[in-house]
Length: 149
Image (tube, rainbow, N blue to C red):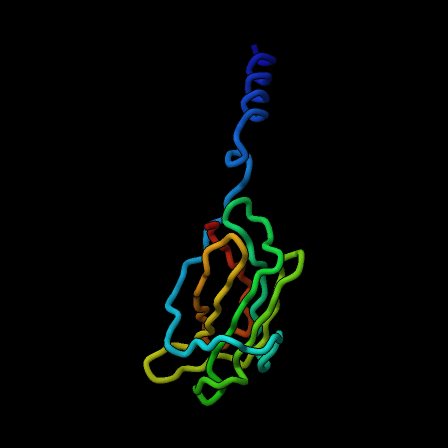
């Protein structure tokens, strides 16, 4: 009987559609774009020092890395003002990994410390979100998980 059940399980797994066999990752929650987004930032991985964000850009379906995903970053300077010196674009490689360093986010009128990011990848919906570090936090390790179109 155990052999029959094992064989039946193998048959079901072997004939299951690709959606059943692939793990799923929870998509990253979106957040507001805000009024200070400006396209066309230079490609770079650093716009300051003291606060690092690192992780992998992934697809929600299958959790695999998204080769060539593009991240656009923007945040305020240490005086709490948006400027072009604190804008950057990164393109991830085959492993989907990124590492971005900037100045620690600061409070400015009406907003807690935060960093904006816009993530795009072919075949996936655009993700716009914000990261909110705790006071004194020098790094955040997080994956950005995009939903397929």
